[in-house]
Image: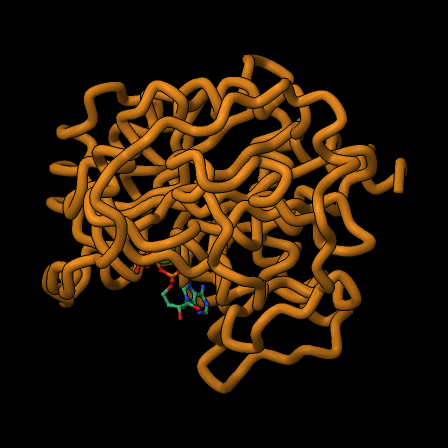
Length: 313
Ligand SMILES: Nc1ncnc2c1ncn2[C@@H]1O[C@H](COP(=O)(O)OP(=O)(O)OP(=O)(O)O)[C@@H](O)[C@H]1O
Ligand SMILES: [Mg+2]
């Protein structure tokens, strides 16, 4: 935990807590159960395809630029998670943070993309942030039909899930706005869905609202194998993280993502590797050396696993 603690200490910055989300959601009043699914069998053959056409402002990693800084960092994160998956049942993961705008959606989307680069790895990115959904914007797909529509019995799962053309990445957008997201998330069908999805997807990543502003992520974490906590360096405070973790009814946090670090800010002894990858890319640092994301270098066994993964590709 000392590394995490160190990261959190670094995260403690001059920013105060962000303002709570404003604006009531609009939507349907009643909550019905989803239409009974006949099963997951054959589902992936029925889903529609959408083109790979991410929004520029989404900052999604680009597989044609494999040595870009963010790509390397997300691959390191992928390696760590896949290593953990080899040690314990780990397929469903909530991505959350203490407060708004710390990079939950950015992390969930990029992690989903890099996981899908591995051969034979179906990955599903679910937008369970029914309050401020954004996944549909990142991938430029329709918001509905989505998960809320499925949970209200208005759409089937095969209508909700989209495959990104030519990839093994699947997306489940949030769906139509609803008045009470928490009520919907409390349906037993949500747990059932989350538990059944790993029969089709090796990784199911759930984007979610911030822990301190809604109970949604806390609830979702009880359905999932693990929780990934995003902290934004220079913005997230230790106090916020402490309160967020303290409020979790089922603390299954398996790791912390240190988002938006400057190059070399963490673990400078690994600078050699960063430089190595960095200068093999066309993408040069800006003047103050800032890169979109910096994460800790993986442990030796994880590096070995990553090399094995590369060999398989
Ligand atoms: N490492 C990064 N590099 C560049 N831009 C980033 C990074 N992390 C987040 N952003 C940008 O910051 C903004 C907030 O990120 P994001 O939407 O992922 O936060 P969030 O925690 O999901 O917010 P919310 O609480 O509203 O759901 C977005 O415009 C995103 O593109
Ligand atoms: Mg978000």
